[in-house]
Amino acid sequence: MSILDKKSLIFLENYLNNAAPTGYESGGQKIWMEYLKPYVDEFITDVYGTAVGVINPEAKYKVVIEGHSDEISWYVNYITDKGLIYVIRNGGSDHQIAPSKWVNIHTKKGIIEGVFGWPAIHTRKNGKEEVPKLDNIFIDIGAKNKKEVEKMGVHVGCVITYPDTFKTLNKDKFVCRAIDNRAGGFMIAQVARLLSENNIKLPFGLYITNSVQEEVGLRGAEMITQTINPNVAIVTDVCHDTSTPMINQKVEGQTEIGKGPVISYAPAVQNNLRERIIKTAETKKIPFQRHASSRFTGTDTDAFAYSNGGVASALISLPLRYMHTTVEMVHRDDVENVIKLIYETVQAIKEGETFSYFD
Image (cartoon, rainbow, N blue to C red; front, side):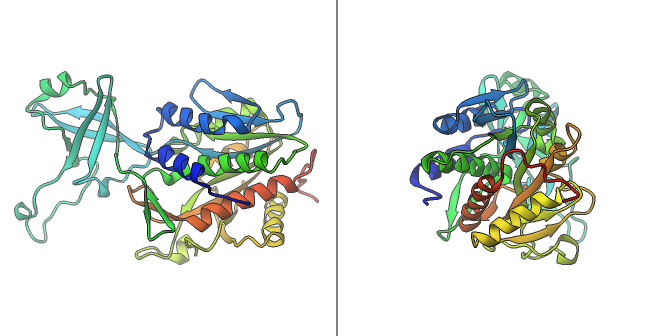
């Protein structure tokens, strides 16, 4: 079974390189649906942009496999008289990585390039240096004043993304911004491809769901689960590689890229569905890791689990280094094994299964 072929890797690169900030995911969703089109029977979309490819739409029993399509970004919040731009977050954007980064400001006149400026080291006093904070980072687009900024099409509310693009590092590491969680949309699309190419007939409806607005509170999943009303939801997102410096494994747990998908334990994770996933991994000899969450997973799993009177939900995560930076890093083997685990688990589900808590 070929997991990542040439066509899929071209799709991954194009999909990651496209900007799809929270609230503005349409460009990425179009790329995703175009790729998925040969492998599904129909699409569902909603008014905020979540896209769903459906296999066997006539079936009453419904299984969701889900990722989210948005990426972190910034909003223009204030323009000074001297033409400098201050920002607010759109999602969990990291202010500490901003200084000296290039940015793209999205306007009705097209992309306006800029940089996050920062005082030169020569002008900062030893021991009294300012650190990057949300109220002191700023963007310079080369304009002499506010009027010139506005003439260029930039105004309060314009969304700002980083232009960093996909690279392969040391043959088997994928590096880019927005791997969180464009990788999820990519992986569930590969599950649909493999089902089609291997002529697998499922006895239920499969809803390949690429949700919007996860980065601001799981909003897309919250909406689309009401539309689909699924019986089962298997969500894929990213989680932290905790093997790099300055991460406390006693707090964050022990997970690492290259060691397999991460299966979560949390109140929102339905126990019997999780055990089915673990059994599938063990039977198919797919390496996996475990992670425990305290009150919530922080992923779309929470939105699906607590919807519609309760939906049996589980979370399979892709371990990732440097989350919410422009150099997010994952291991190719993990990407393939997440795809394989979802693909095999979907085939292990029987029509009408309740995954009862008391079984």
